[in-house]
Image 1 (cartoon, rainbow, N blue to C red):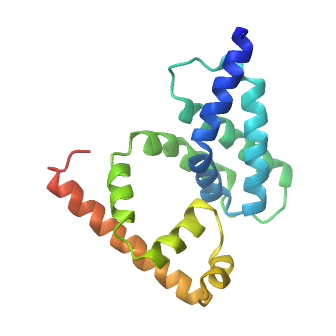
Image 2 (image 1 turned 135 degrees about the vertical axis):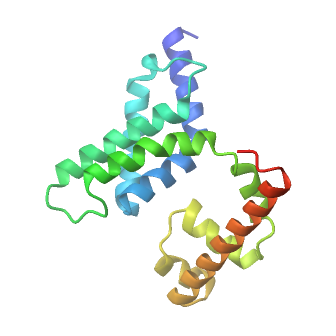
Length: 176
């Protein structure tokens, strides 16, 4: 396998490993499911084009999040007067902090353990909303709930997760 093919295969593999966090990152910044799907595809294509620039052993997540951020900013500029969830300057500020948060956040192992403690329906609602990017109005019919019930369940689940994570971190001695 040639070096460029090997690097391209590595980038593809790493992209798949970081797809869910990238999608969540872009969804949080854009607030638009349809836009996110396009942004993820554009980010992937750009990553493949720039695969030769990626240095194996460096922080892939930060690299791919940066590409995604620029794709989002470009889309916001191109949209002109489209209603935006955030002003492009706000997107820049949020995006600057997001890769470091995602990469260095020591709460993640606790989050996984705490998610297992949620009731099955709450865990399902969280997965539909946060992993799959469905809005509460899209989650409601899948769960057989009202939109308000979904919002309440998500709010309660977030509060339970926050308390669980804080408790687990305190028991661990507060290491961050």
